[in-house]
Length: 288
Ligand code: GLN
Image (tube, rainbow, N blue to C red; front, side):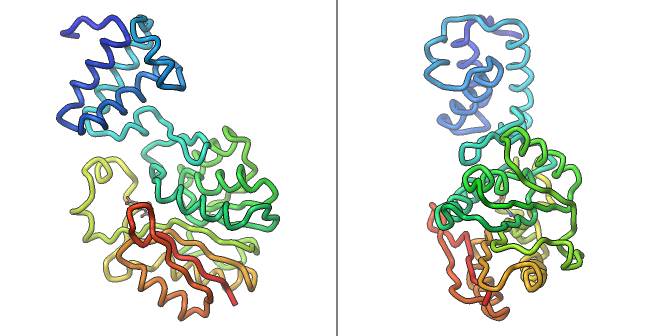
C-alpha cells in the first residue's frame, strides 16, 4: 500500500481515486461507499459519514483492498460485494446469475400493484437469481409462486435468496425451449424476463456486462430473437389458465414484434409499457 490509509475517510478517498478512470465521479463515489459499507457491516450512508474518522480493523481494511482490486478489473460492484437489493429484498448475486436491473424491478412492481391481495398461482420462467419470484412472494404473500431456470447454479443462488428473504417459492430446473408442457403448474399469472439481447447488440453493451455477466441469460440469435417468448407462449397454452395474464420483460426494439406475436397466439388486452427511460420494456396480455 503506497499511501497511508488509516481512517474510513482515507479509504473513501483512496477508492474514489482508484476508480476514477473506470467510472464517472458520482458513480465512483457511490461504488466506494457501497464497498466500505459492506466491509464495515454498516447499512446506511449517514452511519458511514458519522464514523469517517474511525479506523477500520485489519480484516475490514484487507477486505476493502481486495474489493478495490476486483473493481479495477471492471467487475460490477454487485458481484464484488455479492449482493444487491430488489424491491426491498436482499438478493445474492454471482457471475452465474444476471444482476437484477431497475427495469425488472419496475415490471415486478407493476405486477404487485395490479394484483394486490392476489391468491392464485404465479410462475416465473427464467428466474435467474430468483429476484422476481422472491419479490412477488414477499409482496403478494397469499400467492403461490413457482419459478424455473435452466441453470442448476442459478437455482442454487435463487433458493438461497428465497431462504434469506423467507420467501415461499417452489423452484425447479427446466429448459423452457424443451420442456414438456406438463412440467409447469397451472397458474393464473406467468412472468418472464428471458434472454432478449440480440447478438448484434453486443457492440452497444458495456464492457463490464459483456465480461462478467452470464451470456446465456442475455443473448439470443438475431435470426430468432423471440424464441423464448414463443416457447413460453406455447407452454402457456397448457399452463396458463384461460383469462390468466402474461407479463414479459422485453427488448426495447421488439415491442411491436412481441405485440404481434401475442396477438397471433390469441392474447387480448395486450399492453406494451415503457420503462423509466421511455423505452418499451414490458408486454402484458390476457389469455382468452
Ligand atoms: N436488460 C438486460 C440488459 O440490458 C437484459 C436482460 C435480458 O436479456 N433479459 O443487460
